[in-house]
Each structure stands twice: as C-alpha cells, then as structure tokens.
Image (cartoon, rainbow, N blue to C red; front, side, top):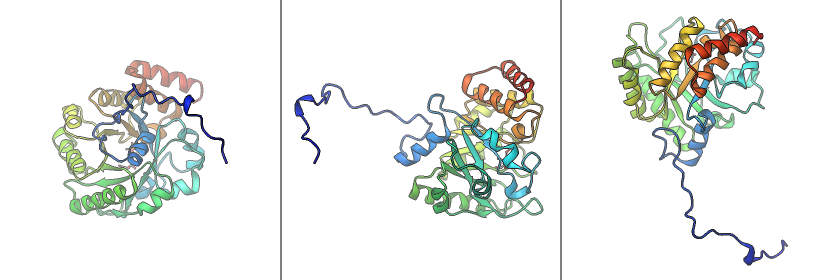
Length: 293
Ligand code: R5P
C-alpha cells in the first residue's frame, strides 16, 4: 500500500485558471487529441512548419534516380527532415525503426508510369498505417484527371478511416500533363481536397497568385518540390512559397538529386524554419557542400 498522501502539501493553484492552449495549426483546432498529436509529429510546433523529405516516387516509377539505394543515399538524411514521405515497402525493408521524425505513408497506388496515372486506388489499410506508427497517410487526387471521381473517392474513404483511428490524411494535388499549374487550377484542387476532409494538402507552387491559393485553403498547404532545378531556383521557390503562407515543403528530387543532398536539405530547413533569405540559404548550401555534406 502506498503511504497516505498529505492533504496539507497539495498545490491546486485554485486562483489560476487551467491553461487551454489552442492547437497551433491552421484549421486543426477541432481535431481529436490523437490527430493533433500526429500532426505535431510532422509540423514543428515552434515554427508551425515542416520540411518533409519525399522518397515515395518508386510506387509508380520504380528505382528513381537518387533512390536506387535508399539505405545508402537516403537513410543518412532522414534525421535531418521533420518528416519522411515513404511507401510502407521501403519503410519496412530499409528505414530504421528507431527513427524519431514524422512519418507520412503513401496510401494510394496502382498504375505505373506506363499507364494512366490517375487510375489509382487505395493501396493500404488504415490498420497497417497505425501499426507502422504513421503520422499521416498520403493520397493523390487528380482534379480534372480521367479518374477524378475515383481518386476523390480514395481520398474520402481514407479520411473516414483516418477519423476512426486519429490519422490525418495528406491530399496531394496530382496535376495531369494536360493541365496548367496556375493559381486558378491549384486553388480549385486544393480547396476541393480540403473541403472533402484532408487535414493537409500538398500542391505545386505557382509564381502568380500562390498566396490566394493558400488563403483559400482552410488547412495547411505544403509546397511540392517537383522536378530537379538548380539549387538556387529550388530555394527561391521554397522562400516564395513560405512567404506566401505555405506551412512547409515536401521535397524529393530537389534534395536527393542535388550534388550535395544533406547540404541542400539543411539549406531548405534554413529557409522554412529560420527565415533565411535565398542568398543566406545558398551560402549554407555551399558551405555544406564544401564540407562534404
Ligand atoms: C507525388 O506527388 C509523389 O508523392 C512524389 O513521389 C513525390 O512526392 C514527389 O516529390 P518531388 O516532386 O519533390 O520529387
């Protein structure tokens, strides 16, 4: 039996109202504790932003350049990102389970690059996402694509499953080759994805009107990286997206296809979390590259 507790030493601070802090993420105040907790594994509460490293490309295009050997090329980077976007196949086979960062699991798939990409289906049970400790699951949504309705249905079924388990859903605006990535299209796609229940949305950057895309989306927007560009261009894009209100970036090829992936990831973090200018971030990149990062 524990000893009896002494009532005279208790400190109830009756005159201090209990703190009831608002959750820090846009649109996320009404989510259950588990979902907020998972979101806080992706977004750093101090900045409200995230740097996600996307390495899920293999789910439709096989051994992408830079991802041929995830154990050699990616594992050393993982602890430098806030979250990793990955398939469950690579996660279980290659990524060390002792990692401490956020985990966004690819949950849609089906067609390869040889077929119509919008013809995706849900490719993972929410049970397995929970078993793997996912912070969120990701699904492509092809607004305007051939299988638009099917991909929207994938999203909404995952959102329903996610609410049953407290797992947020990242809706990814998958833009077909025939569509223009302008503010009008991206505003349409991101808003639809959020309206249908995604708790966070990933989308491409556009030079004109991106701040309106962000303002019109009621949940956090994460900027997608896209094809490899010179480092200065990628850092400029990230700087502009953050300045326009994006809650972070999810970059793949612009990091792992860089001549110095760790230096690039560090520079992107400087932009997203530390407010670095493009020139400052480039200096950070160059010094990291010089040091062999
Ligand atoms: C696309 O949306 C997939 O998730 C990609 O595999 C990945 O996120 C793309 O990353 P990035 O365009 O930055 O290489």
